[in-house]
Image 1: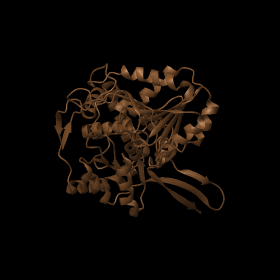
Image 2: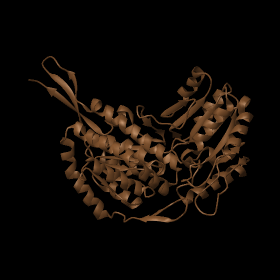
Image 3: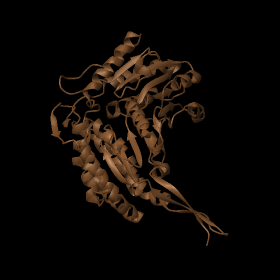
Image 4: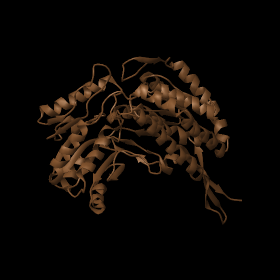
Length: 454
């Protein structure tokens, strides 16, 4: 399996893919080892993860360099991802014991009652390439703290990062028979679906997530899916600084080269501020530096996969063919690497793919709306339900809109952010279940009810 640098198109590594036989061997190893890991006191498991937390800081330069080389995100954003991952790990370190300890429900009378929380067993963590640290720690950290064994399959586009994760977990004291990396493409994932695992946790596209859910449904084990989005941002006519809002929206569109499930993918702006917003947004987009992700000045690096370039061009062509106007961008940058200019489309509507189909790149359509009611209708006109943002001077007004939106997360005067203390969940085609917060700790354990009669 070749690992290709998306900025240079050079092969930077070749990795042997796991076979069906080797994956089954890894499963048997973790199946046996999970029990020994689970009987360790939770404090010991937390101590190992604490060491891993420290190692991410100690080796951040190597880790960030590898991440930028294989997925193409600007180097500072790779450092940002590592810092964000450490923040989430810190939250799990500080709160897991509280949410994993047994709970006494009835302590007096003829029958006492309590709840204990036991690990699921051996789980599959089929992870994503766009934020391999952030989406990874959402799963394997609480899973390991909860006493589970983990078969971790990083994306084929971020396997080098996955190898670093495994190496540092082992160095921190997580035993090899509690955590095993599975290297490979779709076939490796298919083998994991065939194994008698105790849970499946996937981050990726709706198409793949639905396929996984269908294939494991008969096992009646937990299956959590963190899928895509077509996340809207709405600008009300009472915003006080249109240029500032335009800059925030632009960052929400292009950060991580636009390859985020919670990236801003469509923008609705009220009549009164529409022209000023579009003007400012386009001016700021023109100034974005697209180029070598190792250069500190770079704000937008290459897309991670070559096929995504053609996909985005098709979305833009579809919109223009149906009446949209391309104000800026959309062209390929340079002859080498998968670079594309941030694209700004106006005069868009929901007949166009760019307003309904996940883009996963620095491309956005900006649509004019007359009032809050029209904005709510258009924001809800989607198969997805991950996040939605509202910009307004009035929280009361914004809250009325946010309450109408069928999404797992809503934002007022911010966008494209995740907090470890809040559940991360999607609705409709954006997924099933929740990671992060106390719910993301409890997702990896199962309750046992005790009826105790002396």
